[in-house]
Length: 98
Image (cartoon, rainbow, N blue to C red; front, side, top):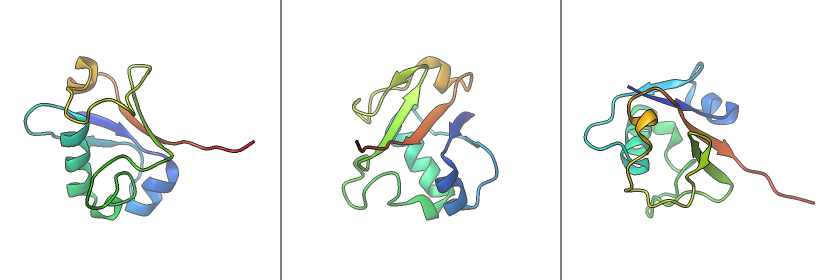
C-alpha cells in the first residue's frame, strides 16, 4: 500500500478526508502511482497532470524521502521506502512571486 499526501485544495476537490493509501499494480513509478490515484479519484484528472500529455502541471511538485522528484522520469521507480509504504509520496502546490 502506497501512501500519498495531497494538499488541502486537492483533497477538497476530490472530497478526500486525510491522506490516501493506494494499491499500485506493477512497478511503483510516478506514472503508475498517479494513474492509480486518478482512477480512484477521477475529480483529480487534469489537476495534477495535464489532460492529454499527462505531464506534471506547472506549480505542482512531487517529493519523497526528502527529495524533489518533480523532474524525474515518470517511469523511473520511486524510492524503495515509498514502494514499500514506509514513506509517503507527497504532491505539493508550488508558489511563485516576489
